[in-house]
Image 1 (cartoon, rainbow, N blue to C red):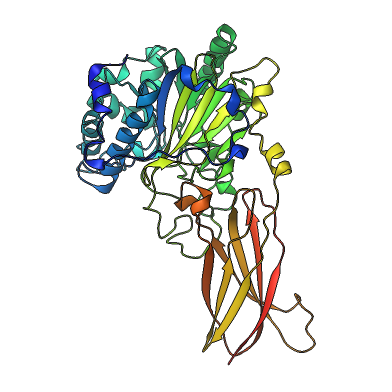
Image 2: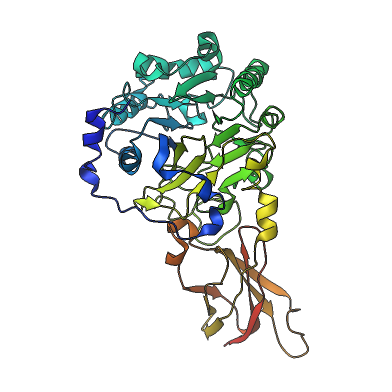
Length: 479
């Protein structure tokens, strides 16, 4: 339903100013673009995650409101926004104020400052921050606070078994003919789901895909599906938890349904990386985070923690899904922080019986077609107790993900490239900070403390597909 109220609201960005939406810059990320009928869009859905609202007048509150307004305004020329999907962690702590659940109330007030929930349906799945003790066997009882405090207007799109929704947060919703399934864990370390929930997911997908084999079914669950998109391997390198960031228990069900499109949150990884969409037997997409960014546990410079950068708050992202009248799906990656879109939209054709719609964003195929980065300028300047290393950005068919600066011992009798390593500094590029690769930094500089002596500075780079660059070297003497 497109109301006059909503259409008039699209004419103003309220207190945010007017967003300037970018156009596509790279056809490589959009090989299926010709399949999509831009003039025949029939449905627009915003997909947001990890809003972490902690009050009504806080930074997370502003970011949520901004994301809602920008999603609305971007969709306006295409017929208007039809619904909002939340992939968990709506709030930061549901019972922050003496168990009064004020953050849920604040979330509702913020949503309704932009949308009427009757006219603009919102569908959510439960994140670990949405319940008092993260995911436990008490999750479903604790999650009832959302049902009570949001009220019945937020559940008008639910068409599934009310018992499954009430007892296990297994929701089946429909917006504009698109079916949306939500499934919530009941355990962490590792993330697991009740057998009844897994069986419900399997049976519901079987019924829907049998009835509509050429239509996508959207699946929302806060935890990533292990071994798929960017970030889904974090458990392999994160010492604090084992199986906390992703789940392996839904894969056997999902791989039976090529119509399934799964959205995960939890990790806050940036959508700028091409690995944020994955296709195998089904499709998976990341949703980043409206609140702040996280990244690999890669030991990078300028980190505030194992997986968060010092500039993590200069970030806010999400997705806008657009369906055309043939069931093709275009996905706009939204950069709410910069009020624009990221790169080219992804496009996947409507489900085909031969599975051909699943090859476009295969990580195996895209990695095989990828070209390695090339480095061409490296300089080193010595100073008292340090070396300043400077280099220009590597050339790549997408972008350099990480630079590696290695310092080795040097001197007479030590062959080039064989000296004892003193240290290696990993520098994450600024790909996550800009909506278009053309805006990335052109020059880099890094100061490294060193004792007096002779050293060799070595520079390498890798892109998102782990392709390594050529190696540059230079000599330096520290007085």
